[in-house]
Image (cartoon, rainbow, N blue to C red):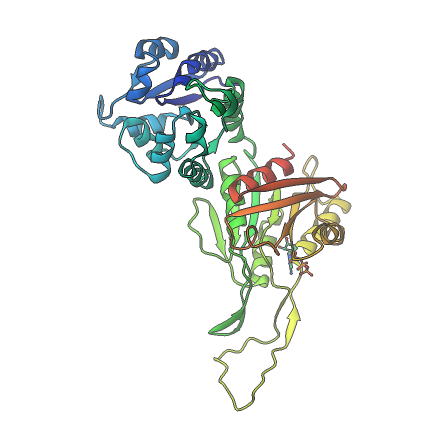
Length: 405
Ligand code: CTP
């Protein structure tokens, strides 16, 4: 499974460094090419010669040993498909989280735009230190994955959490991450995000608190998983894939409809306003003598329900060509009370394949927060709960769950 893959392995100074020798052999046996960067301290625990022989490659330690025109921290990061740091010390974790690049390993991590996996190993008190935990959280928010250490007897004489997790776990995480970039290869994924903006006049509008962060996390993750992403959003995020900037529910509906025929997945993460003002005023509405003012609102189309109807009728009327399947349609469900009851009724009413239920009454998750906790319902009645995690982790789990290969 790892044939031809380029693994950049960072080794920091910790006793668990000796265990990594076995992992290098496993990667090599599976056909991967392994380049190693060791921190100077790592070489107190394993020798350069051992690492060199096992990886059959030069081992890099110091920076600016430039052989050609590209410095090593750039050429190594361009070369690698993935970066694994094992064992990752509290010191290196802290530096990467804070953007410090004072040796070759931390410089490469700073320049690395692909997947990074950390396997921390340290003394139990260091592991429990608030600074270490916060640094890991910062990194996790940025898409870095870490494999928590295990409990047991530690080389420092303590017993507790801090021991490098099993080599099997590390191997599997690398294997999964490398194959993860293929999960949506050749698939077109349309994702909507943000609250729609329903204008009243040229200076005022009706909208909602949706930040668009969950939709953005889904779009970025789908892109990382190899999808062709079309991101239809009311928030102007800077993204490296196709973005369609919209305002109102009607604009959003037009944009989604344009993509319907060629989409393999449509994910409606946007918070679409249910109503818009009946007549938008061309001019700014002036304050009059009256103490009250009435705005007449009319119902917006339910984009999700319309898409589901279109899919059903296309399937029934045989409009789909041989072998082609209608796209998977996913809705979100924001509820402030009776979450599961409302979600079950909603998936049935809207007719979508999956519904991601979100409890917006909690201030620690959902709207505007960087974290979320969701429950995924499918149209067969199956339910999967995803516990609280950063939105990019939730996005990954959602995309894994709805993937039909
Ligand atoms: N949705 C939509 N068009 C609308 C309203 C909602 O496409 N006019 C989509 C949302 O993008 C979301 C799902 O429907 O994927 C559920 O949105 P939600 O606001 O929870 O439900 P509503 O249908 O608006 O019902 P209610 O506001 O009564 O809960």
